[in-house]
Length: 143
Image (tube, rainbow, N blue to C red; front, top):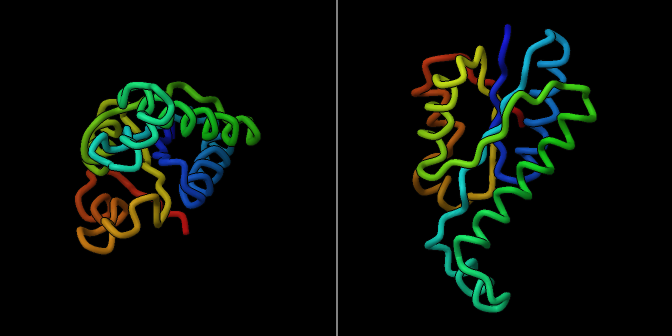
């Protein structure tokens, strides 16, 4: 095993997934790649926040994504995992994660069971369910 890809959306489940992926990567001397999907700019709460802060919506979205990655990097560092790369990507989270898995030749993809999008996950199917069904490489779902 050379590369473990982990996805983080800043949720408690994602943080558990990062910790698991970091321990796995460290245990087999693999690199870890951390990916996050930018929050949807269509979220009305984000729009209101950007107006209140006097920042553009893009700045708010990027700040949130960078915060998720920084927290994930800190968690991985506690396990002495080698973080090879962090990525912020736009689009459907499951598609982003699968594409990153292919791009970085990940030997495994690690995700949390339930992330930020609880209602959307219930209505549309969760990211972890899509990955388990559609990914072309092993997927580890951390409860």
